[in-house]
Each structure stands twice: as structure tokens, then as C-alpha cells.
Amino acid sequence: HVQLVESGGGLVQPGGSLKLSCAASGSIFRIYDMGWYLQAPGKQRELVASISSGGTTNYVDSVKGRFTISRDNAKNTVYLQMNSLKPEDTAVYYCNAEVLTRADPLQRYWGQGTRVTVSS
Image (cartoon, rainbow, N blue to C red; front, side, top):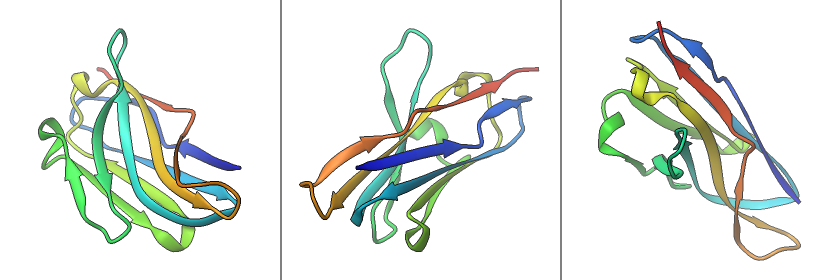
């Protein structure tokens, strides 16, 4: 069984910064792609950024130049540094990881979500 636990959300003023973390634990053999998604009220969950096991990154246009995704493979952890935050970044942010365990086939797991609120 694999668990993803996010942390780092909170309330921040426009223009401020937050850093989200997501740590994976369990009987992990290997983690492939990891990513961050957001879900705003009344909207579908959508991809914000992703990173491959080799470090290749991908961002949605609205966060390019403001957000940076990174990972520490030794710690099975992915991060999202969010700078120059805007009110429209307000959402619940979810971590996602493609994980191969010793008992189960390759599948995607989700964290429980961490809320980010950008408001003055």
C-alpha cells in the first residue's frame, strides 16, 4: 500500500510564496512520474506541473515562470515552489505519483490534498 502525504498549504497574500511537499511511503519499488494538480471550487481537477524520474518537467502555461516542481528521489518526495501567487491560484492542490510496488502493478496514487488560499 502506498500513501502520499502533502504539506505546505495555507493562506498567503497576492505576490507571496508557498512551498508544497508530498512524501510517498509504503512498499515502493520505484516511482516514475510525479505531479501536482489543482482543483478550484466547482471545477475539475487539472494538471499544474509534472516531473519524470529523470527530472524532465512540464508546466501548464498559467504557472510557467512562477512555479517550480522538483523531486528528491532518495526521499520519495516531490515539491512545488509557488512564487508570485495570484488569487486565481486558490485551490486544493493534490499530489500524484505513478508507483510500482513489490506487490502491485504500476498504478497512480493520489494524496489527500492541501488547500492554498491567495487573498489579501
